[in-house]
Length: 216
Ligand SMILES: C[S@@+](CC[C@H](N)C(=O)[O-])C[C@H]1O[C@@H](n2cnc3c(N)ncnc32)[C@H](O)[C@@H]1O
Image (tube, rainbow, N blue to C red; front, side, top):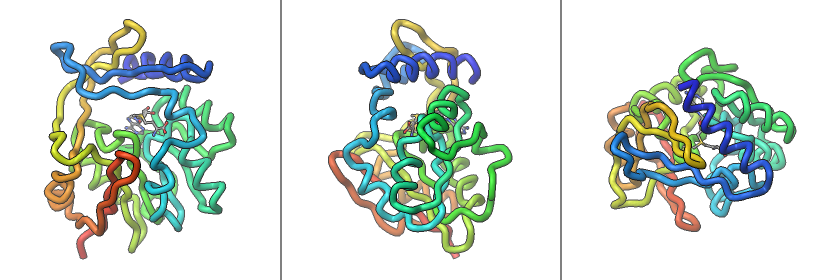
């Protein structure tokens, strides 16, 4: 993962200079599975962010926060928020933007585990670790009673997948690591496997979201 983070760090550095910074998630055979623009993560807000954050009224953990765009947005609404990320470049950038952020793996020791009102998985982060059920179970364990997971999914019908992928940026390919995508029409089944229920699903500006509750 360390070498993958180096490619990710280069993409972030490129985006920091104000340019588009395309990051492709490619299969082992070189097919593009997903394309992202790191400049979006750097912007103050992406179209659809307001709709994504709408359920977050209590303390919120942004899992894989990147340079802290969503943490900053939540703080400006008066919501206590912390971003965690395993990329030192991302956390440094987030702190530089006055977003509360920690260098931390979601599967390791997370601050205030068990006390978060919401855990956010945005911008494809439901793919972290390449095992969405495991990730959702982990996020559920970070919540306080009554807490929810707010997850961004892919569009309905776009298909869900789990694969070893490489990050490709500016001609550089990272070593492979596991990643996943979950389409909106597959999230109910994935949630059920993680002992969660879908409280609601909604869409805004071509982005798809789901709020998940631990089953009682
Ligand atoms: C697709 S980017 C999301 C960018 C971010 N949401 C933003 O607004 O900038 C995925 C992020 O997840 C982070 N990440 C990957 N695995 C992680 C893990 N196990 N724990 C925490 N963060 C992780 C990456 O370092 C990266 O910043």
